[in-house]
Amino acid sequence: MKQLLMGLMCASAGSTNFKRFVRHEITPAERQLVISAVTAKLKDPDSAKFGDMQAGVTSTWAISVCGQVNSKNSFGGYVGMTPFYAVITDGKISPSGVGIAGGTGTYSNVDNMLVEGVCKNVHEAV
Image 1 (cartoon, rainbow, N blue to C red):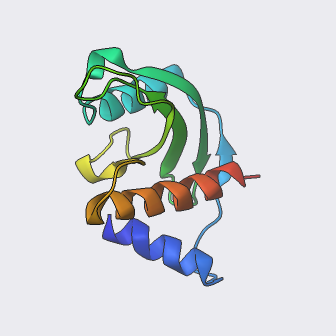
Image 2 (cartoon, rainbow, N blue to C red; image 1 turned 90 degrees about the vertical axis):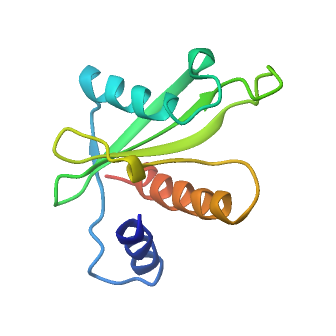
């Protein structure tokens, strides 16, 4: 997570050390990997409804996937489509390789910043 945050800060500072994303077509296996990792972080995993996903790949072959998920909260109501990212490296997603926006508090603010930064770069991928 620290490396990802440093990469985002370098990107925003215009550093040439940050590698731009190249558009990546998500395979069915990658999509299922992302769905499993994101649902594992939800309060009600069985209620998850996913929107479109986009992906970008860096020169180090890390695949960053961005999308939106809607799921139920602790009160049983759907919260609305919420942005997320997941990073796939060597065919796996590490526990710190998933971020879901939303909520308040210190940790949620960091997640919100990471989701926004990663997804902005994925959406701008060429």
